[in-house]
Length: 238
Image (cartoon, rainbow, N blue to C red):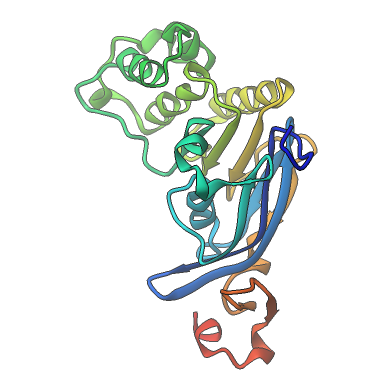
């Protein structure tokens, strides 16, 4: 429990604004998720889903607004924040010469976890490929190796950007089971996706309503206004 009474595992955004290369991407993003909950990000290409995920991971600073964990500003203690999360982005981070087992063992060692890599590989259906180098893996297998770190090195917050890309039906079902188990244990999951994924009672955040050209945002206050009536050319043109 935080000093202000906020539950320990509470991830909250208030009036987040994203500007990249001096071009506004989105504004006015608010959400609050606590232990056991999930947030589902939807929206068309260019609406800012991946940019938002990078902000949530502490890899990109917002142009405005606040992001907190247990009531404390995330960007005041980025090292602590990164230790509490797993971020799976578009790139799998697979080394061509390292075996499947070596990848998972590396991630576990990096986080000081003692979970046997065989357990993690079994949960993503790769136990039969433990000794196979990364260069021989299919796109779907590479994705599953990347997702195996979720099991090998526990963290309360999972940030998954298009996690089902290249996964077949069986692999997607395995991921859905991992997400359900993580939430049942008190974890928090944020997923950005164009495809269907089963996450019971997930909160939907449609980025289409926050993208530039739909809203205009004062970067200092985070206040939102209709771009069509704001006279803000930068937002109207993006």
